Every structure is written in C-alpha cells, then in structure tokens.
Image (cartoon, rainbow, N blue to C red; front, side, top):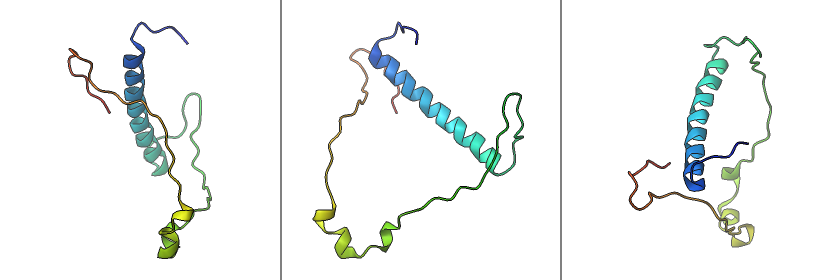
Length: 95
C-alpha cells in the first residue's frame, strides 16, 4: 500500500466513508442481479445467482425464563475508534 499524506485519523474517516459508499453500491447491484434487472454477463466476469441454504436460530422461540436468565448472558467490552470534528476544522461530516 502506498503512503498517504493525510493524517491517519482523517485517512481512516475517509476509508469509512468510502466503505459506506461502496456498500450502498454493492446493495444496489446485488438487488439488480437478484431481481434480474441488470445484465449478468460482464467483460471479465459473469454474475451468477444461486440458491443458498442456511440454518437460522429462532431466538424468539425460546421461553421467556431462558431469555431472562443471566447465566446465559455475558457482557463483552470492546474498543472502537469514533470520530469528532477536530478543533478549528471546517466541520466534516462523520458516519
């Protein structure tokens, strides 16, 4: 990867913004392939829609006394990076 001239905090904020934009574009394209409104044969690849089976846990089927039993729960703590406008900045938009 190339070296960025932007401050690491600003670069990470840019990356997150790019990821949001790309996820929205991916959702649009995916929907188009799934409902057959976009052509699937490209220059380099063919988009294939295939059925997928997956197992789903039905949490709502559990009895209330199980859901409320603290012995089945734990609290995890994680660290995350969040953004706020820097002092004197132009007030960038954050997601």
